[in-house]
Length: 308
Ligand SMILES: NC(=O)c1ccc[n+]([C@@H]2O[C@H](COP(=O)([O-])OP(=O)(O)OC[C@H]3O[C@@H](n4cnc5c(N)ncnc54)[C@H](OP(=O)(O)O)[C@@H]3O)[C@@H](O)[C@H]2O)c1
View 1 (cartoon, rainbow, N blue to C red):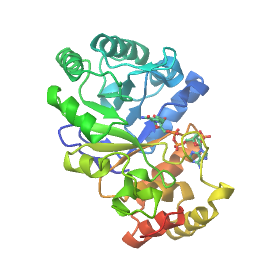
View 2 (view 1 turned 135 degrees about the horizontal axis):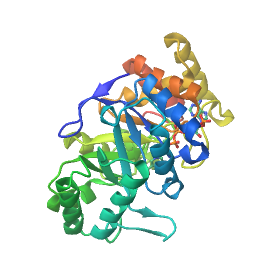
View 3 (view 1 turned 90 degrees about the vertical axis):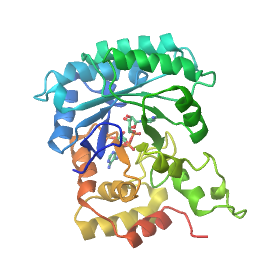
């Protein structure tokens, strides 16, 4: 496993995060086994959100963690708030954030979060209110680090105008299929391809410039709900390239797909979503691989992109 020291944030965090979005499908014993498997493979960072199973993921994790040999102080637990599927809204109002954190802590059976992220932009957000909520959460010791998810540079700047805690994480979609963070940097000012469209104001470079650690979500998925591209018949060229490099490095295709994200110099953390111990090990094997400069480009091109 590789570990990062996050600038102004937590130290010695694993490059691979175990994402718990799919945990509601497991019972507590199964969940304990996956948590232990993650730890056995060097993972010390776990990602949640209040909306995963409407709180069920956090609840199951809290129950399951007690069945493992892991100590709370040896791991990092992060959750996200602000998405309310039942209310059909995103909400960053102060009282809502504070209430959400109390719910998260009680479901996870812990008295602090290592990090709290605001999950998706509340279109009505007031930075002053977020700042007040973060001050209270920091002062009470309930939250140790703060960040966001799916946020663009100007929204981050607006938040930073009032929030005094460093915003150290931005969780964003990135995979060999979903490369929009990277594409626009390649096709700058180019009218011949849709990939040149700057959808997020140079977010990748903004995060690097501002020491914001990107956490890549759904790193193996096609689109948002399209399933996994590993072994998918529509991704033959990519799978052939993953297999060839897998053979060279003696790891699975999954490990190579994740090594591709880790090879980027932005020191990205990658969030694994599997609940299968075999897949989890394959995913973590990615940290043993250092792709060459040329192999990184080869995979990018095999995923259907082209150089201008
Ligand atoms: N911030 C956000 O907006 C946001 C959005 C989505 C997700 N997330 C976070 O990102 C995490 C990861 O998302 P994700 O679950 O979509 O990620 P993923 O790792 O890309 O996908 C995992 C899914 O792919 C399946 N899969 C099939 N073949 C696989 C293989 N060879 N290796 C590994 N998995 C394989 C897994 O099934 P098996 O379990 O059977 O292996 C699982 O259903 C979530 O848990 C959550 O923490 C954040």
